[in-house]
Image 1 (cartoon, helix red, strand yellow):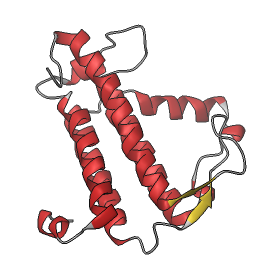
Image 2 (cartoon, helix red, strand yellow; image 1 turned 135 degrees about the vertical axis):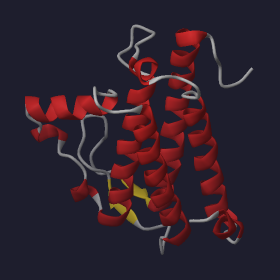
Image 3 (cartoon, one colour; image 1 turned 180 degrees about the vertical axis):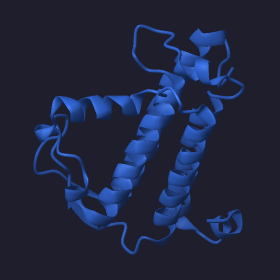
Length: 177
């Protein structure tokens, strides 16, 4: 989706795109001018790192895209995860050796473009699916495509806050102020 396409979108879709863009900006901004080693560095008692957060948000946004289009069957079955499955899932929170921050950011940008295209073109923002089964989600809850896009923006903003704390602990840099 080009910036000229963005100017032709109005109403709630434009609002959704603006919310996503703002949250993504602040998350990406926390990684400015750092090395891959810094992107892997834990700076708090949390396991979270800047590179890991970028990878996690990318994977989560991709999963929610599939949920909007395909429904809950496209999501991982957390109740059936083996130790190997869980270890692979946990690696989604880490910038692994051989991975680069630039690569993670490029993948995030590609996923974000696809989400933006979905916001702009998905036929019905009121289309619903039952949430996939996961330990943190109650059964029998349905979300619209709209609610799912709002969730992506909210989760991205939440993780941008985490990233800001990590970055400030890393070298004193802040996203705001």
